[in-house]
Image 1 (cartoon, helix red, strand yellow):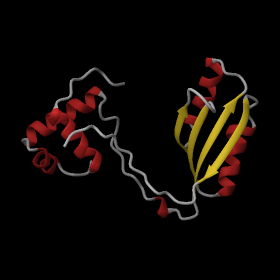
Image 2 (cartoon, rainbow, N blue to C red):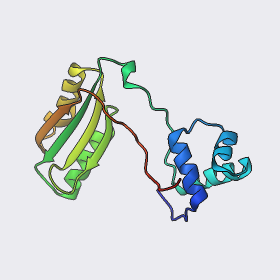
Image 3 (tube, rainbow, N blue to C red):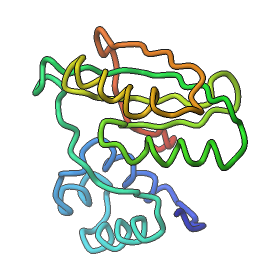
Length: 159
């Protein structure tokens, strides 16, 4: 959970640099930000503690598994009450194949981004998450033919 934190230009610069390459050393980060290594370390710790940095991950190339599928799936539920939506959201969010789960304000109720090792894995997932759920009214799945852009980064307006 993000606590209220005032971000100055140095904080924004550090966040931008970390979004580009979180594996760089503290020394390299400090140098790129124009601050001392001690200041960089202290500020990054503060950003983590405040929740401005959710986590640090390695992005694995999908080409590592060339037969895998990325599916973007729209889900519409029959019952729209909060308990029904919350139960569906919790169930799909717990599945390892679900990379992203978005609850929407209009259109379908949810959009999911899935990564599965192949079509048989998608069919098993669809059976497990969608078909067996009596509250799922409609499922529309789109399978990615090519990823044109993937840039999980926020434009913070820093330079």
